[in-house]
Each structure stands twice: as C-alpha cells, then as structure tokens.
Amino acid sequence: MLALLLLSGIAVSTAFEGGNIGKVEPVSPTHLRCAVQGQSDQDHRNRQANWYYFKLTGLRREPVTIDLVNLAGEYNYRAPAYSVTKDTRPVYSYDDLHWAHFDDSQVSWDDKEPHLTLRFTPNGDTLWIAHTPPYTNRSLAVLLTQFRGSPYLERQVAGRSVEGRPIPLLTITNPRVPIPKKRVIWLMFRQHAWETGSSWACDGAIRFLLSGDARARAIRDRVIFKIFPLADPDGVAGGGVRFNKNGFDLNRNWDAIDPRTTPEIAAEHKAILDWLDAGHRVDLFLSLHNTETGEYLEAPAAYRALAERLFGLLKETTTFNPTMPLRTAAETTTPGKPGRMDVAQGLFHDRRLAAMLMEQMVDFNAKLGRCPEVADRLQFGAGLARALAAAVTPE
Ligand SMILES: [Zn+2]
Image 1 (cartoon, protein in one colour):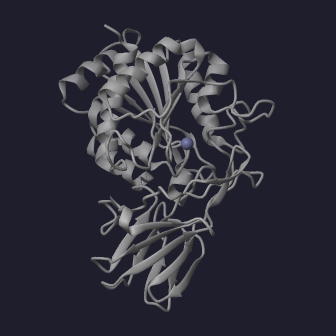
Image 2: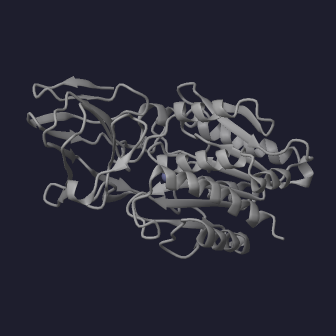
Image 3: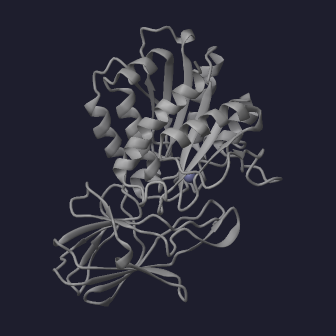
C-alpha cells in the first residue's frame, strides 16, 4: 500500500482493496513515471507485470502524462515476456465504478525502454487507473447481497487462504429437483488475481442463473452449477498478479498439492473430490482466465466431442472470439517438472474429469469491435451459462 503526496500536487494512492503500483517518480508537476510492481513466484521466476490499480488526486484540468514502466517479465521460464504492450489500453474511472478504456490517441508505446505512456486531460480532480476494470472480494459480496434469500443459491466456505480469507463456493440450482436427476457443471474463476475480466463474466453468469428468466429456470431444473468465484481471495484483496501470498501459482501445482504453501488449492481440490466421493457427478469443469491477446478453449483429448459442442455453441451464441482452434490439453505445462499441472490437467489426471480451461483476451476484440467492456463480460457470462448447460444436456 502506498500513499504519496508529490510536489506536483498530484497524489498517487493504492490504499484500497486490489490497489497496486510500484515506485512512483515525478518527471515534472504533470508527468509521473509509475513502475508496475509485478509479482514473481516462489523461486523468484516467472515475473508478471500487468496489474496496476491506483488513484490520482489533486488533478487539474490540464494535460497529464503517466509512463507505465518496468514491464519485462517471464512466462513458463521464457524471458523477456511482456504483458503490457503497445496494444494495451488501460481503463480509467472518475468514480471507481464506471470504467472506460483510454483510446488510441491517448496511448503510446516506446520500444527503446519498453513502456506505455498515457496522455490525457482529466475532467475531475480524482481519477482511478487500472489494467482492466477491477473486481474485488467486496464486488462479489455486493452481488451476493442482492441475492440473499434466493432459494436457488447456497453459499459455503471451502477453506481458508494463506491469510485466512474464506474461499467461497456457491451452488446454484433448483433444490427441489433431486441431485441425481441433474447434470453438474463446476466453474472456477480468479486463480490469477489480475484476471478481473473473468470475474465480470462470473458475475454475469450468477446474475443470469439466479434470475427470473424462463431459460434460467429451465437450467436450474436440469443443472447444478458449483462455482468457485474467487479462487485467490488474498491476491484479489492485495492487488496481486498471478501468485498466492506464498508465491505459488494457483493454476499450477495441482500435481503437488501442499496445504501449507497452497491452502487454496488444497481446499478447492478437497471440495471437488468430496463431491465426487459422495457419489455425485461432474459433467464439465471449466476454469476461466484472461490473457492479453489470446482467446481459446482447451480440453483433454478424451472429451473432444463435448469440448467441440461447447466451442461451437460459444462461437455461435456469444462474443467468444477464438484466436485458434480447439486446443488439446497436454499432460502438464512443463514436462518433467513437478508442480506444473494446471487445475484442468490435475483434475483429469486424478479423476479423468472433463476439465477444461478457457482464456479470453483483454485487448481489442475484433468480434466486438472494441476492447471488452464490463457490459460485454456480463453478457458473455450469461451466454456462457446457457452454452455450458446446452453442452451437457443435449436434446
Ligand atoms: Zn490465468
């Protein structure tokens, strides 16, 4: 957490849930160099630098320049890897609620010392800037408050994070229809704290599934949705990027589960196995993620037909904009190295589940004709819920 009052009169603060920025240096009274903090894993490798969420106060209605610097990282041990690039369009808000992307004329990129520069003239004295529209533990709490008392929503706590935060597990279905008569879809969101776009999709899916829409009613009669909405609550609270508080990637390590280092994985894994061991089914498991430019679905070869059905439904009925054909999952992300199975690989390995992974881009999406906005994600979430239900309950 950081609260800096600079000589310029522009103050930079991250003293709120999800806030994060690295070192801030004034270049002039209206020009700040802001280092993106980034995060590395337990071995100080795989640095990723693409979460920033900070508040500027003391702005006047005159042009401001912000340089986002210190962007080089590493991905699956390959470096340099850049998450923030020339195509990144950060978002801004005047109320911390409604977000818009900076447009092309306000953003420029320098290849020499790779950094992204924002130039804009503010309309108010306070402005929030973030990589993508933030979604915090508090955002989920606000959503669930709206559905308090719904007979179709059950809330559980699957376990505790490193810092003791609850790991929420939601069940959405019509409880009057017996469990064995229904299919089961298990969803997971925010294994990586920066990927807020997936949370907005989760929010949209929950809103739809709990709504009075006739299609939602029919789905609740036929399907049980089990949902981990925030798989890394510490990272979400603290403005993390992709590792838990002990530095472990929660979408790796599913083949080396240790409740001391990754209590989140241990709790999530146990909840799924307990469900299966109680004699229940899981027809489809899906973990949702964001990348900057890639959008795809990945599934085990053994579930090719089911994955193709889902892929086709998503392509036809939602803004899913695949940048590659349906991908077949490998056994692990890094052959020969323990601790490198993602959740889908781990669940397939353990129980031969139809466990899939989806990535969605945050940069310009040609199918939408813009960078995905909050409204697009909410709408996608509703469409995703329908496509998933249709995929597991063919006519
Ligand atoms: Zn991810």
